[in-house]
Picture 1 (cartoon, helix red, strand yellow):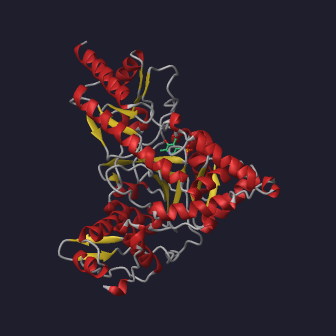
Picture 2 (spheres, helix red, strand yellow):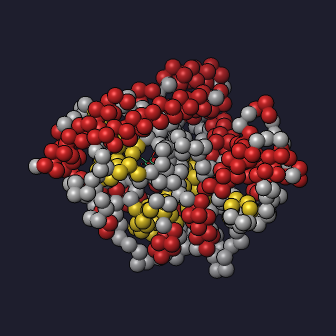
Picture 3 (cartoon, protein in one colour):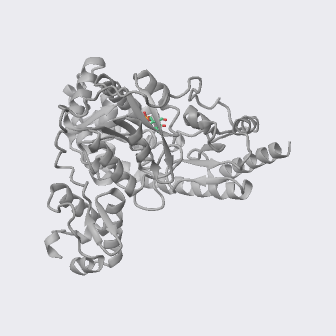
Length: 488
Ligand SMILES: Cc1ncc(COP(=O)(O)O)c(C=O)c1O
């Protein structure tokens, strides 16, 4: 069907990704209107002279991202929600998105005293979640990038920076996020922040200032976030997560008009937001004139398939994308970004201008160089292979040593959510494992007060920093700890 205008560069390879990108662009520009029926995979593969599997893969990717709908008997159509270039008309009675009245009566905040903390040091086998393999930080290549920056950077670039971030980094990131995350990103919408944490803190403070005093979060959620969100001045509405991700119907009942989600790989359960829920979440945001804060957690590391594009790419007016290099390179760099509608981005930039005059500049240029030279992509490819075999090794060893445990979530990321056999005392397992030299985190502090008492006992295991043999050893020790407890 030549009128789809999908030019392919056969020499460049990755034909399914090219077809998906072409269709995404067509939907975004409005060239393919909502409801438009696409040709069957057989017809399109014939027209484009590619195998049918290539077209099926492209369609599946776009269905997963929410751009297309596929129904038995009705073929594949453009989804009604996927028209981000057309900002939703303001709802009657609202002047600026997303200003809101103070909703009341939502669920209570997280109980105090559940501090996120970190593992006490000195563990023989450290499976505390949240860090990548720090030993794999590409020191040599980073040094090369910093040298190149220092050789070529004009003196003027050493003055106070653009508070929104170095232009070179914003431009490289925009290209990267468009290419890899299917984001709707221009350099002008990107603000460089000190990690997702700073981006989130500032955004939530601004939302609270606009009247969004209730923020919905996934239940469970990263316990690192609780003190930050608390400090930002919002109350939390904890919304259950099931095997499809955030329960959007439950979200709608909270009265919140802003939500923080981890659609790519929910932290900590490891599930992925399903296509239906993605569509429902966008519909919710439009319906309540609200905002979705998308923490693009673990998006770099999907092992079972191509990563699903970010939600922000589906509706950039309603979704703010937050990302960082904390899991892809190292948290120590404190380099992250926010991709936001222009008004929101400008407020973040103004905040940095008023509060800290911007972030360190040389690291920003070094990251821009990493992106431009392809070094970042190469590093990610290498880490993906490594993390995948570590995940497989840990999952297999857990099956062997704790056969009644259930590993949740998809093959992605750098942690596993492991439901312990029924009757296990989570807290005791964590303590006994620590005595045996294995640092693990219990899941209970990540659940809301209301649900933590009923949540099945579970561990969150970070596997990024140990080789396969040590992961197997850790699983064996955990198995011994659990068996002793059960017998004792
Ligand atoms: C789910 C989640 N998102 C974001 C962050 C913060 O990451 P960053 O280092 O980019 O600030 C954390 C920190 O542990 C986290 O657990």
